[in-house]
Image (cartoon, rainbow, N blue to C red; front, side):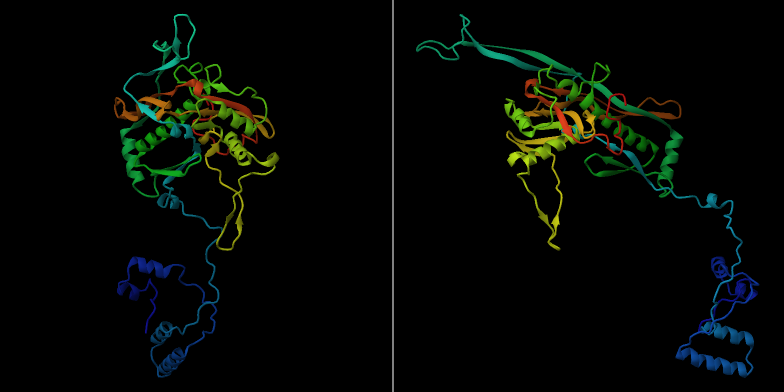
Length: 453
C-alpha cells in the first residue's frame, strides 16, 4: 500500500532525501496552517471497504493515530476537499524580474510583407557574354538589282543570266547597365547574429517570401550577413524586373530600356489602329493573324491578360452569349459539381499556342469605375530556335565582398545587364480598354510598380 508524502517542511520529509524539485512540487498550492476544508463522503470500492474495516479494527486496538492516518491516506480513505480555499490576493501582480528571467520567444521565421513580382525576369531567357555591349546586325532590305532599274523578279531568258541581288542592313547595339544593392555590418554583429540564430526561438533564422502567381518560398539563413544578402537579392531582382518592363534611359540615364519603352509604333513595332475602344477578342485575334512573324508570348498586366483569356473562352460563340468551351468537374465522393475554373497562362489562337506572362508592373490606368486602359505586348521571343528577346548579361547576379573598413564589412549583390529586343517589325503592341478594376492588389510589390517608386 502507498503512503503519501508528509509535510515537505517536516524533518521526516528532509530525512527521506526528497529532491528540491519534488519538495517544490509537493508544496505548490499547499499553504501551511490553512483552515481545514469541508470533507465529502468518498465512494469506496469493495477492496477499500475491506481495508477500512481492518484499519478501524487497528484503531480500536490502540494503534498509534499517526499510523492510522497514513494508512487511510495511502488507501484513498480520506475525503477530498469540496472547494480549495482562495489564499491569493487579487489582482495578481507578476514578479518584477519574471520577463527578464523568462523572455517572450521569437518565431524564427520572418515574413516579407510584400509580394515579389519577377514574372518577366523569369520568362525571358538570358544570354551571358564577356563583352560590354550587345551588338547585332539586322538585314533591312534584300531585292534583285538590274542595270535598267527594273526587277525581273528572278526570271530570265533562255541562255541568259539571272539578275544579281542587292542587300543592306544596319548594326544595332545595347549597352549593359549596372543594377544592385549594398549593405554594411560589423564583424561582431555578424558573430552575435550567428550565435543567436542557432538558438531556436531566440532570433531570426528563416525568411519567407511570396512570389506573385507562385508558391511561398522559405530560405534558411545562418546570420545577419546571410539575411542581408538575401534581402539584397530580393530587391535587386525585383528592380531588375521593373527595368525589364518600364526601364527608360531618357528618365534615368543609368537604366536600360524596358519592353514598354522599346516596343512602340515609333520604333517600328506593329500597333492596333484604334486603341480607344473596348477589348474585342475577334479583332485581337485578327491582329495576331496579320503579323508576318507569329508571337510566342504575350506580356501584360494580369487583369488585361485575364480579359484576353475569358475572351478566347467565348470566341466563336453565337452572339458571344455563352462560351464554346464548357468545363464540368465532378467529385467522385458525392457526385457534386465543382463550380469555377482555373485559367492557365496560355491561350490557343488562330496562329497557335501563345504563352501569357502576367506582371503587375505593366501600366494599367483606371478610366472608369469598372474599366481600365492597358497595353499588351505580343512578342516573338524565339525566332528559328534562337532567342531574339532576352536579358543580355555580362555579369550575372553576383555577390561581392568590398574592401573592409576597420571592423565593419561591406558587401554587395549586383548584375551588369540590359534588355535586347531584335526584329522589331515582328513585335507588336495592342492597346485597348478592358473591364474591371486594377487598384485592389492587396500587398504592395517589392520595389514598386513605377520607376522611382
